[in-house]
Length: 215
Length: 378
Image (cartoon, rainbow over all chains, first blue to last red; front, side, top):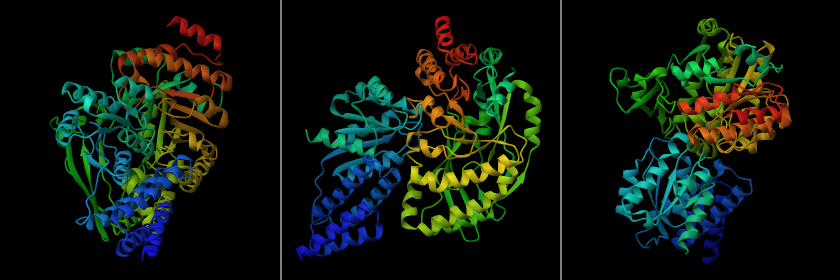
C-alpha cells in the first residue's frame, strides 16, 4: 500500500512539473485513497512547485508555466480541502495581499497567492484597487506577519507609499513586513518608500516570505 | 526641417537634422505649456483608426456611460456578447470622470477597462470562435485624410490594424493572461481554434490597413516578455506580424509594432520581425533593454522610445534623458530614434518643460561635446 501511494506521490510531483492537469488530479486522488496523509500530498505538491520554480529561475519556464502549475496546485488543494475535516492545516504564517488603489492588474498577485498557499501560508487576498485604509483594516483584523503589495503602473505604484504611511499612522508598521512587487517597481523606489523588500518575481517573493518566517 | 520632415526622414531610414520628439495628442491638453513646448519643436502624433469593425450576428449590450451627464468616480457594468452558440460577458469599469475630460481619458490615460474575461467555462471558447468568425471590417480613410490636412507640418499620423494580434487579443482583451495560459494547457484544441479563427479573420483587415493613407501602420501589441514569453513570441507573434508587414511593405507603407514592456528576453527574436519601427520601447529602469543595445542589435529598425520618467520628477528626468542620448552616440549618432514624451498619464508641466528644453537643443549627428554643452546650458 505504502509503496503504491509513494508512486502516486511521485507521479503527482512529476505531473506538476510537466504541467499535466489530468494526471496531477488523478495522482492526488489516488495517493489519498491509497493512504497518503494530506501533509504528504501537500509536500509532493510543494516539491513539484519547487522544481517549477527552479525551471523558472533558470529560464526554462516562464510566467505562463508558473500560472499553469499554480492552477494545478489550486485544484489539488481543493481536493485536499475536501478531506480536511480529519486533519488540521497548520499554517506557516499569514499574509495579506493587495493590488494597490487605482490598479486592477492581478496576475502576479494571484500567482503569489497560490504559491504562498501551497507553501503553507494563510493568505488573505483583498483583491485589486484596494485603498490604503482597507489594507490597514485588514492588518488590524487578521494580524498578518507580512503584507504584499502589487502594482503594474508607474502612476499607481506611488500608492504603495500611502499604504506604508497609513500603517505608520495607525501604529502598525512595526508589526508587519512589507513586500512590494510589479514591473515598474524598482529597488530604489521600494527603498525610498520604506518597504522591507522588493520581489523580483513571484518565486522570489515567496522565498523571501519563507525566509522571514523561518527566523 | 519641419517636425513632419524630421519624422518622415527618420521613419524612412534617412537622415533627419534632429532627434524628433513627439507627443500623442490626447496626452497634451491645449495650454500655455503646450504652446511653449510646440514652439520649441515638440511634434504631434495622432492615432486615427482606418476601419470600422463589427460582429453583425453578435448582440452586444453595455451600460450607458453616466459620466456623460454627470461626473462620477466609476461605474461598473456588465458587457454582454450574445451569439447563436452562447453568451459571454464580463464586467467593464467605466471611469466616468473621463467623460468630462478631453479625449475621454482620465489622468492615467485609461477610459474604461474589462474586468475578468469573457471565458468562464470551456464552452465559452466556442462563443469566442463564433465572434472571431463573425468579425467584419469596413474601410474608413476619411478621418486620416482630414487629420493630415489639419496637422500639416506639425507631425505624423498613425493608423492601426485592429488593436492586437490574435494571441494578444485573447491575452489582453477577450480572455486575460491567466485564463488563457490555463485553458491553453487544459483545452488546447479549443484555444487554438479561436486563435486560427482570428488569424483568418484578420487577413481581411490587413489589406484595409495596408492601403490606409497614414504615415505609419501600427500592429498591436503591448509586447512584454513576462506575458509574451519567447516561446509564445516565436510561435504566435512573429508569423502573424510578418504576414502583415510584408503585405504593407508591398504597398510602400512603414509598419510598427508596439513593444512597451520588458524586452530583454525577446531581443534576439524581435530582430526577426519585419516591421520598420519598434514603437514605445521603454528604456531602463522601467524597461530592461538599454536603447543603445537595441540599436546595435536591430540595425534595420527605428526605435520609437516611450519616455516614462516623468513620475520621477524633472531632475531625475533630466539626468536619465541626458544619459539616454549620450548612450546612443557611439551606436547611431542619434539617428534611428524618435522620443515620445507621452506616458501612461499626462505629463506634469515642469517635466514636459525640462524634456522639451533638452530635446530642442539636440541636433544630428549627435556628439558627446554637443551633449556636454546642452547639459551646461540647463
